Length: 92
Image (cartoon, rainbow, N blue to C red; front, side):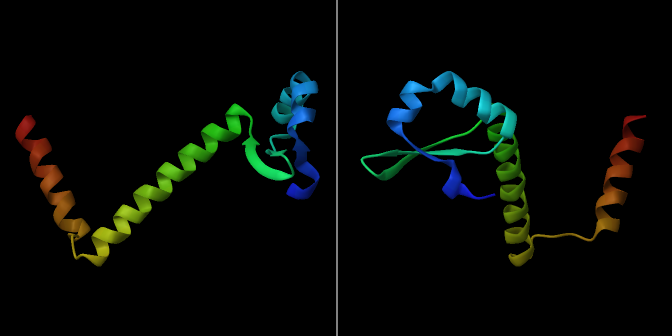
């Protein structure tokens, strides 16, 4: 994706907001908004934003898991499965 083609000044946003929103929803590519020649904001459709947030959440979980592995806070899968089976059997 080339972001260089997706850069617009704030005046364009003000004049074409409805069209921009339709384009964002259709193309699902972010739009960089500039003010006085400097990047100031990124516009993104809601579906892409939600997908990005879910991806970030999964990456955070993976990072936490890697930290646990590095810190030695792990247990063999067999031991965890046996413990869970024991809990399930005690509920019966």
